[in-house]
Image (cartoon, rainbow, N blue to C red; front, top):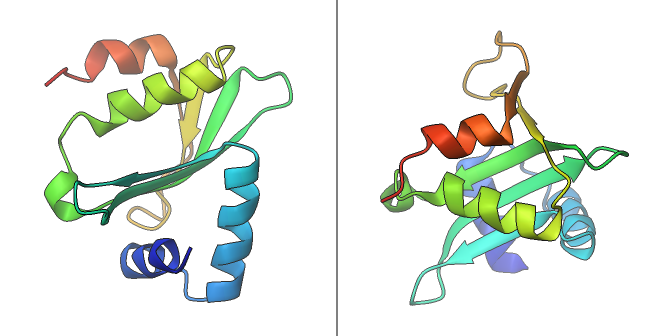
Length: 120
């Protein structure tokens, strides 16, 4: 858990370690958090989301990817993995509030994302 907290603090604006632990534990319990590691056991990404009541929409809350792992087909892999656990999801929503604070929430169909994300 300490590695996850350190990773999130490095790549996000969050600083409250206890709050980060609380959120990550909750999302791990609900299977709405994926943490990836490399061959050395170092964290490569953390993705956290919520699923709507009807199970058709996944709202991406956080997605932090280590610089050397960006553009490596992770979005497709994360989506395919999430669909395996939550097969009813049809839409993905996300907000890029940290990087683009004035942009509105985006909604994409799963079909569109899978079609547009290149396979490596």
